[in-house]
Length: 312
Image 1 (cartoon, helix red, strand yellow):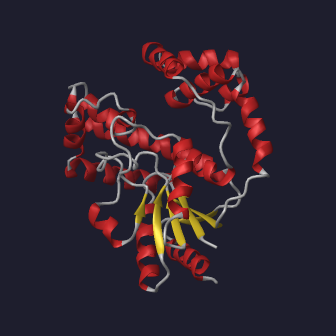
Image 2 (cartoon, rainbow, N blue to C red):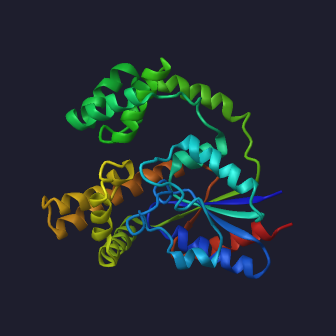
Image 3 (tube, rainbow, N blue to C red):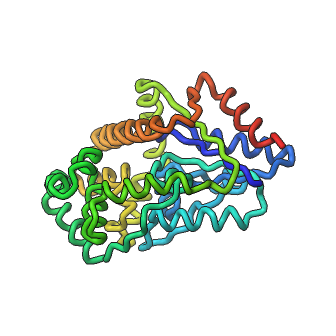
C-alpha cells in the first residue's frame, strides 16, 4: 500500500525544505518518494516568489506534484484539489508521498472527505463578493450572524473568503452551513484515507517565527516580488483571486503609491503572522498530529518520517 506523510504547520516554518531534504535522501536509497503540494497558492502559474514556491531547480531534485497546474483565469477549489490529488497519486509510480502545506481545509478534505458539493452559481458568488467589496466583510458577517449564528461564531469578521463562501453556500443549498457541517461530521467515520498515513507538523515560537518571516519577506522583495506582481497586473490579471492573497494585495497597494516600501514590508509581515496564528490553531485541533520544533527537533522529525516510509 502507498504511504503518505502530511508535513503541516504555519507559513514560513520550513515545511518545503524539510520535504525536499527527506525526499532526496529516500530517493538515493531507492525509496521512491514524491512531494505533493497542499498550499492553496502554489497551484498557480506565475505566482512564484510571493508564494515561496520551490524553484525550478529544486523541482528537478525530486518529483513535485500539483505545482504550477492552474493558469489564469482558472481558480482552485477544495473539490478540484480532492479530485486531482487522488487521481495524480493513484496513477503515479512512486509509493511514498510527502504532502506539504498549511491549507487546513484542503488537508481536512483529503482525510475526511468533502461537504456535499453544493453548486454555487456565479450569480450568487458575485452578489456576495461585490457586497463585500462595497460594504466590507464586517457587514457581511452581521448578515451571517442572522442566518447562521454557529457558523458566524467560528469565522472572523475580517475573513472575506470564508464569510462570502458561507453566505453563498447557505443561499445555494437552502441550509445553514452549521447544519451541513453536522451532516459532514456524521459522514467522517465512514470515510477512510486510502493510503497509510502519518501526520507531522513544525512549529516555532512567535518571536522566532516573526524574525524568520521578516527575513523571508525581505528576501522575496530582493528577488523581484514587486516586479512579479507588476507583470501580472500589466497582463490584466489584477482581479484574479490569488492576487488578493497575502503579499500580492499589499504589493498592489505599493504599486498604486498608497504605501511605501517600509509599510509594505510591515503589512505583509502582520498579515503573515495573523495567517500563521490561524493555521496553528487549526492544526492544534487535530490530536493525531506529531509536533516538532522547526529548529531544535528537526532531526527527530526527519527520523520519524524516514522510519515510517522505510518500514515494510
